[in-house]
Image 1: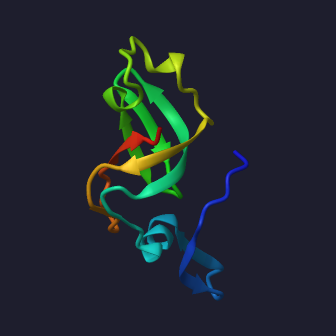
Image 2 (image 1 turned 45 degrees about the horizontal axis):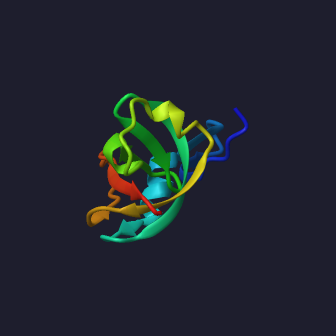
Length: 110
């Protein structure tokens, strides 16, 4: 897997040799806020027929096919592949809150 995850210690019990960690709480502690026009660098995680999911520091954002290019695209795979790095702009005010599984809508920075 070779992927680093931010983790927060929730419970350490030496008697029972128990350790409880949370990735979700570690990300929520960073409490990332994105406003309209926030420019961030992201990495393409997955490509779907309707767009691509971009990882921006542990938070997923949807880059819709209509926002990828001014030209008409028939498939997203013609311009984006997993692992590609992009500068993207947040299209609305969005605040990452623990338990919120929404995706941040974004557009490509030209």
